[in-house]
Every structure is written in structure tokens, then in C-alpha cells.
Image (tube, rainbow, N blue to C red; front, top):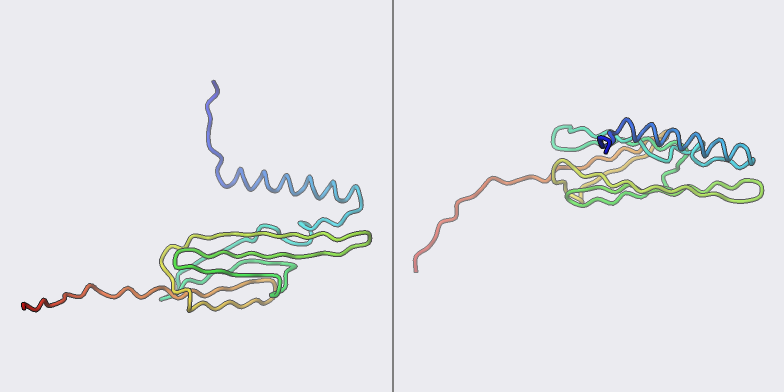
Length: 140
């Protein structure tokens, strides 16, 4: 039996790129616009800690703010979007949904999101963890 190895992110990214190229070629052969050629179907996300907040930046070329939705819990964030493209003879839509586990708890009530020049920027405030408090016990 051959040795089995798990795929790393580089191998998966190469497979995705090859599949995108294959579908783009197929669409070009039949004169159909390729949605993945117009829209980056897998957003690239960068997350960094800045003081008491997490800053998440995601590239969204081809999308508008009204095409996107962000949902936040204390431990994760989901970014989803749908883009419809109309062309001669039909309509095509592309959608994605990406759930990102967060490295720390955040306050879902204090989230800001802005969208400019194809970049979605989300600021998540970390939950403030209060120090342990000793409670005095009253004898009755």
C-alpha cells in the first residue's frame, strides 16, 4: 500500500487554481462569462490583533456592500456574499460562505464593518475579561 499523506494548504490552493483555470477555459469555449474570472470566489482574509480589537480585512473584488453579509458570535465570524451577473442569453450567480474561528472571544454587539475599493474591513472588540473577585461570605 502506498504511503498516504495529507494535503497542505499549498496543494489545495494549486488544485483550486487548476480547477478555476479548467472552468474558465470551458466557459470561454462556449462563450459564457466566467463568474470566477470576474469575482474572486474565495476571498483572501487577513486577521491581526490591534490593541483591544481584532481587525479582519478581506478582498472582495467585484462585490458591492449590499452583496455581502457578516454574522458574528463570540467565537466565530461568518462572511457570505452573492453576486449575480447578467449576460446575453442568461444570468449567472456566484456565492460563497466563509466561517472564520476567532482566536479570542469578541463582543458581537460591538462590531464595525466598512467596505471600500473591494476590501471589507471588520473591527471586532475583544471581550473584556474581568479579574477574579473574592466574595465575602456572611455567617447567619
